[in-house]
Image 1 (cartoon, rainbow, N blue to C red):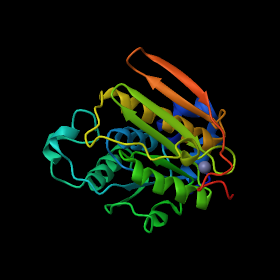
Image 2: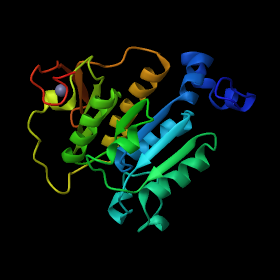
Image 3: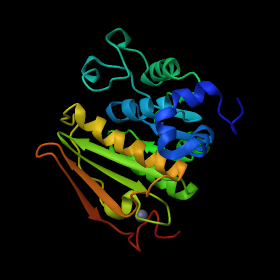
Length: 246
Ligand SMILES: [Zn+2]
């Protein structure tokens, strides 16, 4: 089917969400391209939802191979897949879920040079990473290309989400001038990335369809230990080396 209409099967598949944001919203999703960087705990969930909901094109970037210790939370994968490239496995699995979605994958490690190839077509970029160095590369490239970037990070039963809308709110560098120190193996309660990735997709779908109000200018904190959400108002730093010049 063309990108301008939905066939009867698509109307049926997406019935419940069309009741939320209408056929027009669904057509916007069908025309949209999203890049998910990292298909681990966060990216497993965000790529599953984006595919299930009928995004037009999904680009997946991950250079890692599946390990036994990933399987408690990276629910895209199966035990028999251990040792395989995650981006390739993810693309196969997601295609089975929804053949309407155009899926492209890259298995290179992100650098400040190649990042532009992965995000140039994207309407929204989603953070599924587990390290700050790569996150700041993505943040900078998204600001430069004026792409919405939805950050999430997790630690134990805690996590945070920040929607970066270049020029309209703070970027990741505005709120974290110093790169946080990080342990090599972050403790993670497996449901934590699922919660945060669901929030990321909610925001991505809102930005694409125009439904609702994107969470710009606030850092959302999730505390699964005491089960609460907090939001901290955040604003742009004039001297931010990344977005201070735009
Ligand atoms: Zn900034």
